[in-house]
Image (cartoon, rainbow over all chains, first blue to last red; front, side):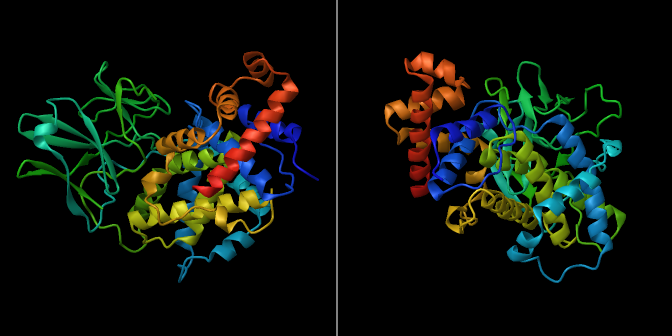
Length: 223
Length: 188
């Protein structure tokens, strides 16, 4: 059987409608590459590719459970080989996921307190020159494991995590509204990190980052 | 995203405030750290997978698989950078497995080079990759792909726009995707 325009278009239509394409075997590598290319093009459409609220809630609620189960077992000596991962049947996994992601467990988790830190054995990394920072307007940066904002006030600079304390999306700063806004579910935070949204359970504030100024360079402690 | 008015950070990672060691044996607090570390990566991994499979149901299934597999296979005293690259590695094997359902030959060569910097494999750059790919195509191929994928035109609308029959649009789309697929294979 050869690949043909009609079959390929069916695949394309599925992508464009956000439907799961049928997983029928393909005749050759060209057919596979054409579909992979279609998927890549589909994902490049502006606005495509953000996870839905429902999905984020399900998986964010499942992760603590999976971590709990893992910690309860004896620690593996080494990481599983690629082979052992592949041998785990996809069907089995899917069933496990369906069972694990229970609808009743949705989004009741409160994220860990803001004071907890993940940086261990970090180092100070220069991210910006103080002279390049505008007064009062948060500037986004990424340094090592940290995504954050730097906010200058005179000769002082404060650092805030740019990760939304709701579901972990990266916040944008709106100059017009002078606040941080989450592209995923619309959570908002003041420039001092305080949440300003109307969630049922108040969100934790944005964690502060360790920032110092060395010879005119703003440095952030990061892993 | 409101690119025009916002300062957007490119990829996901979090790291809150004070610096405390992560490596303490099996306390509840430790589990919270680990949970949080995984949770902050969900959106980035989802976007990475979505940019490879191009549809929501597959991206959701595969993302959930990646986290299940990654959490299962990782020590609980993992450091943050290790966790990050481990998640991407699991995502790659999961994607390879996904495509193997379509075409069972060994497609190892289609997989990406894990040693490349992470930033080059994440979402904002996906658009640049598409631009670069489009630039290699003849005008008529580029046009049909732009209309279908970037503007989301139906086959009928594309046919009207290009003054072609619907059958011709599908043939043109077929040739364009096959050509682009070969180009992509050549320059990853």
